[in-house]
Amino acid sequence: MYLKQIELNHFRNISAENINFGKQINIIHGRNGQGKTSLLEAVFFLAITKSFRAKSEKIVLQHDKEYLQIAGLFETDKKDAFSVRIFYSVADGKHVFFNQNKIDKFSQLIGKIPVTLLSLEDLELAYGVPANRRKFIDILLSQVSPIYLQALQIYKKALSHRNRLLSLISENKENSSILFPWDEQLVKNGAYIIRLRQKFITFANEKIGDYYRKISFRNEQISIKYKTNVPFEAETGEIENVFKQTLFDNYDADVQRQNTLIGPHRDDLVFFKEGFPLKTYGSQGENKTLLIALKIVESEYLKEQTAENPILLMDDIFGELDNERINNLIQCVIPFGQTLITTTSREKIKGVPEESVRFMEIEQGKVVK
Image (cartoon, rainbow, N blue to C red):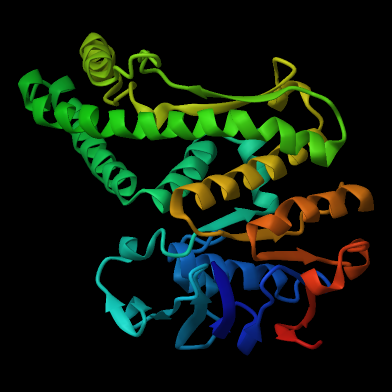
């Protein structure tokens, strides 16, 4: 996948800009607060239909402006071209267009533009709450499987209904039989979610150690564990019956808490170095290196599952890496196709073939050179 051109209007501090990109490494440099991250945010917006920094389009709309627009022209690895446009106004809300045709459900766009994002906020993957790690794996798997996205949406709705009913049961306003149809929905869709998550973790464990060692130059064992409270049999793939029984066994606790305590909505990913949790025993630099390696693995998984090179977005990640590690990282990502990297200093990029890199400087929301 290749983003040829993006046009922005009234998006954050970018008033009106039309930018062309190279097919491989694009280095977007400039001082802080000039619009570098906003540019990556706009690309992510085109792929996922939402920001990775803001919960509402109102936040990214320029002050005193009536609308914002993001338009991108893409080319697949098979040389097929298509366009995506996102329009938002306070009066009319958000509208998404694919090849100038309006999309009724935004989820229809998910997966058409495979994208991997690594930003400073992603440090929360290592240090933050489990919800951050679930969000990471859910965005990834939703891009490779429309069925996963659908299962996730149905699961969340069923979970919300079930939790409301648990409150009524605890107040003796309903009996336990009312949970049956929602338990069926949880089990069916939750089992599918767990299977695909575990499939990715198996893939990641085969790859992440090599990338970690290439970037860190340390011969250390890195692994990821998928931590679930549904004790399924990995060898047999049996999940549904175990999930159903675990829900039944936990019924009293669920009613008491008025909340569903079992299921993939409470799962987590745990990262290990040499058998010890990296979150507890690793330095900030080691955690950052693991996250970079994880994002490269994510790109490789997207490529394998979608038969398209994903667009890789890296936002200001060079802070604790020396020049040798930076250049080694860039060599790792070149095979995956197009990469957009922001940095405050162009001088950090040395020793990379000129034909592989396009530089652009952003100042006050404009590309100046």
